[in-house]
Length: 408
Image (cartoon, rainbow, N blue to C red; front, top):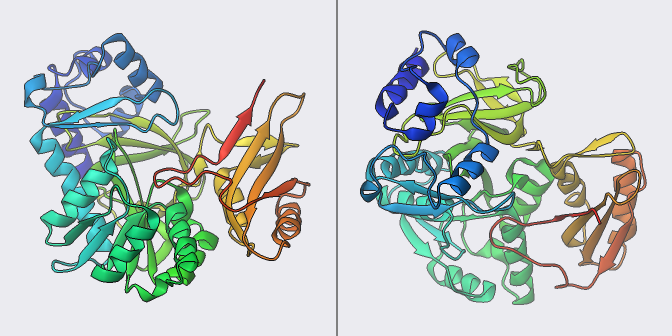
């Protein structure tokens, strides 16, 4: 099988030079089957990586090659702990760009098209890799860093890019800003928005709202700095995320038992980076909850992800016996007209957690009551909703931090 061969190529390329995995894998240099790989090769966790970086600053011991061979620097977002630096050598960076070109191709982009990037180019891998991959395949890449939202929209009105890459939240925010400028974003000529950083692109209510505002298709994508670009929406079924199996050996396991879950059941996505030899990850527990479903393929691995990234294993809260994921709240919020930005507060100070929402009301003042009613219907419990003025809540062009947990 191609996956088995690629796994053994990876092990042969990184061992024994990679100190981190030499310590984890001992004398093992190959596996005879994927079953042996699952049973004998240990998982890698983010906590392990964080501890390794702390013990061996600033880059940890995960680098396979001498430091001077690495030409790309990025770091993780730090939304769950301190940011971790991640380096790539030229071959590893080329591998990342190949994966992103696959994303652009599935979004319908072709050489000669143009794409707009309305974000500042910080140290996060996704910004740079999306931009450089587009340029490398002949797409005119238009940077929008360092500009206000209003100036970004004016730039788009002038240059009329066919594609845009941003978070779902920022796509909706730009639409709202455009209304304030008397500039309808559905007049800008955008054919498709590639959204990432948040799960909204695979949530029907969010996707439909963005498509309605922009008059354009929505293509979901997800990845991580430490892993790279992983998925893209199936062109024929927007409810499915397809994994780039040539670059990743993917598994889905139970977060509790760590056993493989059957198709159709929810589990945690585990990835092995098959071509990033300079900074590899083997059986990395991403923390992303997904539902694998059959695709009809036999090789590479025959599954896609139904409903996209359902949530994070460590983000779920249990309120009065009900499991609540951020994506479920997002779906309900975006199904109610008149709600702009929002924030979820989880109060864990009492004997039992309590949850409430703060929203920006865009309409005639009825959104607060309508959202409370919709939340009660979906979750069978009262979730209080408080409205605040427009512009009160923070807006991010990167990952929106909407969940606030109160513990003290």
